[in-house]
Image 1 (cartoon, rainbow, N blue to C red):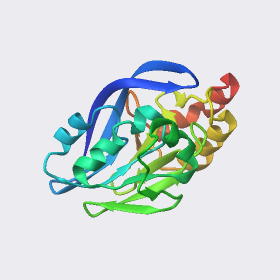
Image 2 (spheres, one colour):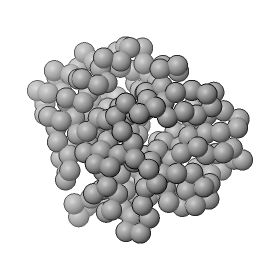
Image 3 (cartoon, helix red, strand yellow):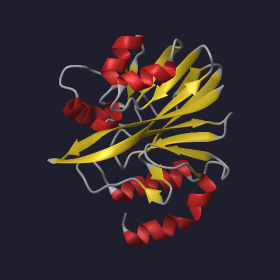
Amino acid sequence: MRIEKVVTSGTFSLDGGTWEVDNNVWLLGDDDEVMVVDAAHDADAIAAAVGDRRVTAIVCTHAHNDHVNAAPALAERTGAPILLHPDDEVLWNLAHAEAKPDGPLADGQTLRVAGVDVRVLHTPGHAPGAVCLHVPELGVVFTGDTLFQGGPGATGRSHSDFPTIISSIREVLLPLPPETVVHTGHGADTTIGAEAPHLDDWIRRGH
């Protein structure tokens, strides 16, 4: 079992604005099968990293276009289902007029890849259907855009809410073991223990 990162580049668009972004695409699996977390920007690059392994699922931490824009193309190439929390369908529809997710994600759901359990945690705030993926056996959590090194994900655009993301971080993520490695949707890794002491600072600054 191993975790691999592919960094892809493209744009994020919402509320009439467009920004250049680099995204972390995470591959979780072994030599035979792999789960893709957030198929961003470049299906060819992701498929090259997957190689000849079977893709068990393409899991979306949320449906902002920069996290899902390569998902339909990757699904077509691999035959893997696209999984998304239903509360994020409004954002998915902004990114994809035709293609639809293949299945729902739900809080407490357990996915499985290469013999390891991946627990779905519903963590709304950055997006209404945002989820994190906790892998207790590996001591990691994939947080998408919910928690970064230095604070919560942005909540200044449509379908996001700062008090909600704070509640998600406080009640769902910070209770995880402090040594848990946080694999984020953009930028560098961190740990739960490194971020937990700063919660009150984030609340005071309001972002």
